[in-house]
Length: 483
Ligand code: UDP
Image (cartoon, rainbow, N blue to C red; front, side):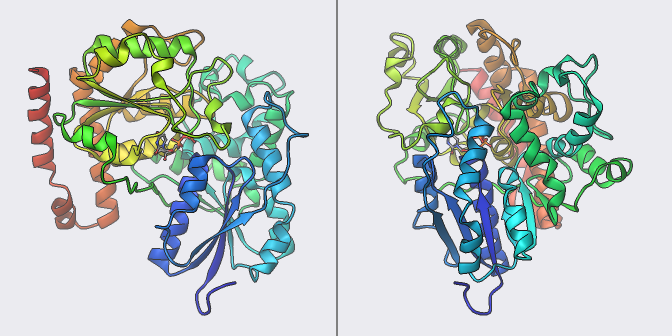
């Protein structure tokens, strides 16, 4: 029930940490910065351990209530082979059957915020006259692509991947067909139909909030706001509200941070592939060898490999992160040989704190949008290793437009990126001149964002003394090279 006198809104996220984290951050921001009472509707079907822990954390602010939507049995509707968006959408569709009564019981909140995969809520909210806003958790350029998809679908007869030219979303950078997300590579299957269902309903939003900011994606933001895009494509008002990223509260004795404390400045590569990213056994072996050959320092979040799917860990429901033994699937002797320079952790690391740590020099990432924002917010350059969803588009943008990442040859691609290539990019980003340039760009972005936040040069300088940080960076690079 709404706290008296305070505005009351509801927030609804589809499962998956990549959605839940930014929607929870939005909720915290509404509660703490704007004095709004938030009911966070939590889909509990197929919730991962990380989701359960996050949404039942004792550190959530007062005024943010997590309402568990009872779990439903979807086993008859999905199988182990059901692809990710279809599975997510079936889950959401079934879980949201009681949405109307939940919203009524909550006293009809004044607005509902949803993510891209909860668009079934539009109908219920229309019935109840509750304004509904989409918090679009991926990039702005991907929003432009999604808004354009119905036009593309109408105009193109063949599969999009067979188009002779890149897809030209009005006003935006062309999207190469090899970068197109899996969900739009075969228009005949349910995975596409569900994706199309949600994206074509985006214009039903009363507004779209973006987890981005002006300096990071100027071209796509300009395109969405201006002619001819706006005129050609139904587009609700958009608000760049980002970066909304989480702030870890790691254990005081966290293994990763304690280890980082002992390493030189900017010397460590952090390797983590989001909440769902999973490598094949052959690729994990090559990655481990590449790290070892590079002789650079690293933290590797090592998940049990699988050849089944690059996003396999997404649906490891209720997994126990302690029952995961990297030794069993890393090359023989790897842990022993690298113990002076590397730390291997199973399944999960406090990513934001790791990226924030001064010893972290680069991030090998699947380029999920949250990971991207977290890396940029902390001025860390990336090795782009896209795996699924819109990550190939993100990677191309980071490498070609923003200049803060390098992509190993062979990615995106079929087969395995070999150890020599991995060694090359790890060295390049941590000790090469190209790495220096990328780091400076990432730090400049961080600074621009701070300037936009504080709008006061003196305040920015007091939080982030650029000269001293750049000097410390140069000194540490010189030091590391000399090791
Ligand atoms: N994350 C983390 N530790 C890990 C792996 C991931 O804290 O070991 C967090 C990461 O900080 C980010 C989120 O999980 O906030 C992953 O979101 P992203 O959009 O990057 O990828 P997705 O999981 O949606 O593919």
